[in-house]
Length: 144
Image 1 (tube, rainbow, N blue to C red):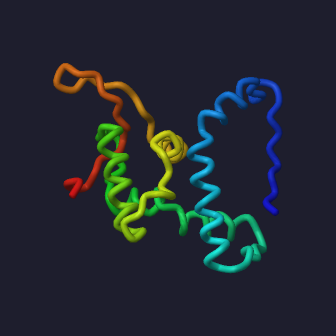
Image 2: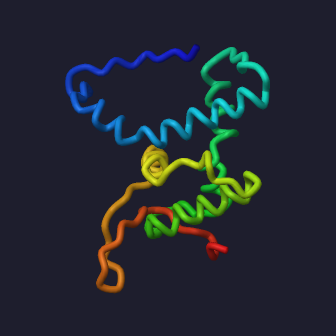
């Protein structure tokens, strides 16, 4: 069991949380399937002593956490088109998981994870077309 000590009261009390979570159901299902796959593979639940160990294990098993340092430069100033970065993540995931992307997170969860890591999404005009881009990150090389 994981300790959860945060209370959502006052300005943190989001009355539309159910609606927001409902739109995230496909990504949450993907995360649950990743956990189930690990449980089946290990044939047991992890025996965790403290939250620090949980965080370390999560980071180790988090494909986005592995993708960023291997395939991206994170710095102030650069940007990447959202679709290009997500496509690169899917290719990376597929290469690391025997050609399967079934358990890869969807683009919404991918964006939420990047936001949690301090990488924001904004609109930018590129060649007279408005594109959504992630700021302060760029791909290291070509997508192939």
